Image 1 (cartoon, one colour):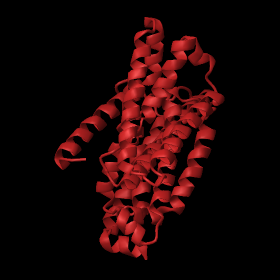
Image 2: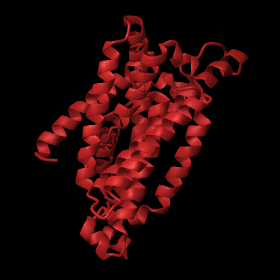
Image 3: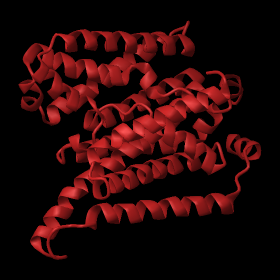
Image 4: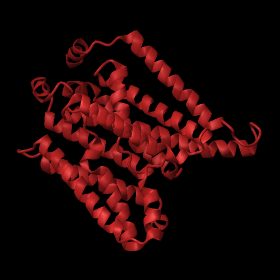
Length: 334
């Protein structure tokens, strides 16, 4: 019944949407092949050729995982909050990651960053971020006086507080420690380690399977709180589950490559426009494909044309930030 209501409220122009989907998928495939094989040293099929391809495959896997996590998390966050202006970073996830990295350097020195690198550190960071989000949601939203807007406001305040704490500690660091820390705090696809990818992919896949199974309930939640309750959906429980899943996806992405504040917003907003539907079975795959296409094309161009692959996240965040401001000014309100 709910799916029928959604389809009637948001008709899909299937031929046009299918054509756009195929075009974006083709861009992803071509860009992925280019990233893997373009200008590879050594003759095709030689040992050196496959070694170079295997190294590039780590970057390709990181791009795919980050695109899946960021795009899905932002679409889910928009559905849970019923607001397409907000991003998951508003809850302080990025600020929490920054304060954890800064505290590690502040108390133990910059050598602690490389000395503690490993799966255990990634797992601890992810658990802390997800635990922080779960406690925040359970305390502010699941209680009898739970209010989504209060929870978002507290998330903003905590994010500002974490940012201020990080700034204080960073000002007390030596110049060399600060330089090393700054390099870690910029979202960088080259920060990822091949050993992290299988575990990150396993967690992200499990979350995305859960999301796909609840896609029809997500369509109902997108109708609003009153409509969801009238259609028999447990609104608070579903929104709390959504926010926890968002926390898991964002923590996977952030611990792999660092903060990416506006990338998810950019991808999700473009997906809404191009998909021509509010149905999550269409929007979610479209957003993931768009995320992969943007990252792969940007990575290829910056690596092989401008020889500045490390600038990809900086450029995307700049474009995403400008896009966010333009979208906000055109809409005129949160």
